[in-house]
Image 1 (cartoon, protein in one colour):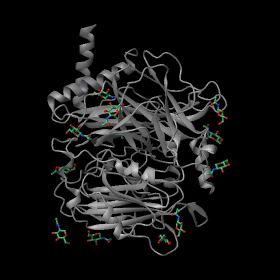
Image 2 (cartoon, rainbow, N blue to C red):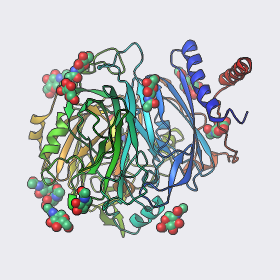
Image 3 (tube, rainbow, N blue to C red):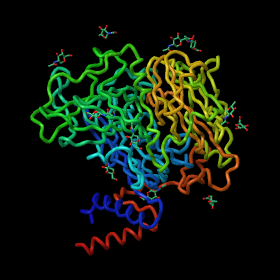
Length: 592
Ligand SMILES: *[C@@H]1O[C@H](CO)[C@@H](O)[C@H](O)[C@H]1NC(C)=O
Ligand SMILES: *[C@@H]1O[C@H](CO)[C@@H](O)[C@H](O)[C@H]1NC(C)=O
Ligand SMILES: *[C@@H]1O[C@H](CO)[C@@H](O)[C@H](O)[C@H]1NC(C)=O
Ligand SMILES: *[C@@H]1O[C@H](CO)[C@@H](O)[C@H](O)[C@H]1NC(C)=O
Ligand SMILES: *[C@@H]1O[C@H](CO)[C@@H](O)[C@H](O)[C@H]1NC(C)=O
Ligand SMILES: *[C@@H]1O[C@H](CO)[C@@H](O)[C@H](O)[C@H]1NC(C)=O
Ligand SMILES: *[C@@H]1O[C@H](CO)[C@@H](O)[C@H](O)[C@H]1NC(C)=O
Ligand SMILES: *[C@@H]1O[C@H](CO)[C@@H](O)[C@H](O)[C@H]1NC(C)=O
Ligand SMILES: *[C@@H]1O[C@H](CO)[C@@H](O)[C@H](O)[C@H]1NC(C)=O
Ligand SMILES: *[C@@H]1O[C@H](CO)[C@@H](O)[C@H](O)[C@H]1NC(C)=O
Ligand SMILES: *[C@@H]1O[C@H](CO)[C@@H](O)[C@H](O)[C@H]1NC(C)=O
Ligand SMILES: *[C@@H]1O[C@H](CO)[C@@H](O)[C@H](O)[C@H]1NC(C)=O
């Protein structure tokens, strides 16, 4: 039995999927995540990182549209844990979103099973731990939703699928970084950029010390690969490029784009991109894969560059010489702004559903409400360093908001989040947005902070209709793309500029909106949107409280203690699958 271990778990997942396919319309896929500390030295310095199933980055979740994902998370950290799935819309089920306003944290040594459907979704995403700056230490991994067979993808089937998780990195652990922020210090310049948990290739002996493990991507000449790139970092926008190769942009966070070649792409924190990359070079040597810090003084930041290796199977030697150049516009954001707005959706391609992505004519729908969210550099409130939207720094939830609704807990939150910045001193509060179900809203992100910000909304994707520098005004609406704006869930807001998005509020629940810049988020730059259907007739627009829900805060008395049980590699989610397990072992028995 012991020998079966992980391979058995692997086959079990696959067999479970196969069986489900033949039994039910929407199959189930089962996963077990054991989240623990481990030691790694991505930048040559040993440090404590967060691993999932002993992997850093964590394992890939790779499912198909409409699958039901059942994922048992075992918390082996010494602190609370929640995993969140940005971009996965958790339709009707904010119960599974994995942020403090929707879920009680999973205490140390406990486990909790998420269950959600990747309803009507396709594309490239990633998961990560949402609490306490843990993402700065790892715990992230790729989340892929593939098309159903009946819906063709808008390009030839690639010859391979490559995932690159890029991000800035500190050699301090997340508790040390947290302590710095708690003491009113900013995090300062990161120590490097890592790619798939590994440090830079030694492209320059002065800049990169010897003995650092780097990532190598092996490819065959002439083939085309889908390269999925995610910025999982703390706060640095990264310029991504592959020496001598074009990046044909095909998808961002779940929507197919109008395909265009780029020599490099700015990837902001929290964003995901798919590029089709053809191995059309002569392989006279290996090629550099580069992720370099953006909108910073390159002279100072040079050491903070991520470099991996693209190795053709017929390569004639190692990569050498200077890295390919980044865009030369550090002090002029118009190039970056134009690049961002050049990302548009392919209106004729089908996404998760058979009808074309462009069949939802968002540009013809009247906006019901406008919210302007203004960010400024961190301020001091009640003697603490805090970050704000509209002058409100969010106070950590104690009782998840929708659970508080279900149990009539009063005072868990306030519905008074202002729809625009108010002329009043900043404060700490639990103010959330009272949004209207079936509304069609406009959100203006106005960034008066000194850094490029990433804005993310859970439970939805939104149309990125406009971006500009300076202050947004009503006249800015004239520049909106009302035809083929990209739909995604994380968008950049340049320092001193604005970004406008449109969202159709069709997903009931309480949804987090936040800065993906981890330090800003930690300091309170977030809020939630409450979207409730006043005429909900029996779980149609929102699923009921899950049976295994955890209770905390005002509801802590309902929580039964959980025995710390030993880890199991194989977890079977329901009685039906116990039967499958029996069938499975019977098959092994027969085959042997
Ligand atoms: C914890 O995991 C066990 C199996 O290892 C499972 O039976 C149980 O339902 C899980 N608990 C929760 C709250 O999900
Ligand atoms: C995801 O699964 C699909 C098949 O369903 C496969 O083609 C692809 O290579 C997988 N991707 C990764 C990164 O595992
Ligand atoms: C985290 O960093 C702090 C400060 O450098 C150090 O005291 C602590 O031992 C570190 N924790 C671990 C588990 O490495
Ligand atoms: C390595 O980087 C240093 C510092 O930027 C630079 O002076 C030097 O020319 C580089 N060496 C090579 C071989 O490119
Ligand atoms: C993108 O570049 C490749 C060469 O790398 C070329 O073959 C292809 O036609 C280009 N596609 C578009 C849409 O420009
Ligand atoms: C970039 O940093 C270097 C080193 O501190 C400094 O000499 C240079 O003036 C800076 N460049 C700009 C444009 O600020
Ligand atoms: C758009 O999608 C269609 C598939 O419907 C595909 O044939 C076409 O090449 C795509 N166009 C672009 C510009 O990506
Ligand atoms: C949008 O609003 C305009 C005027 O405010 C109105 O004439 C039009 O019918 C509305 N369109 C829709 C689709 O409701
Ligand atoms: C929230 O909005 C609804 C209308 O969408 C309104 O009926 C309700 O009074 C509002 N609640 C608060 C507390 O403002
Ligand atoms: C932009 O808006 C801010 C806040 O309302 C204001 O202080 C500032 O003067 C405005 N800037 C310009 C250029 O209008
Ligand atoms: C922020 O707003 C102030 C005025 O309120 C303005 O002077 C400053 O230039 C703005 N900075 C950015 C980065 O937008
Ligand atoms: C709604 O959920 C509750 C609790 O799970 C269940 O008892 C009830 O049957 C469901 N109603 C419908 C209409 O599905």
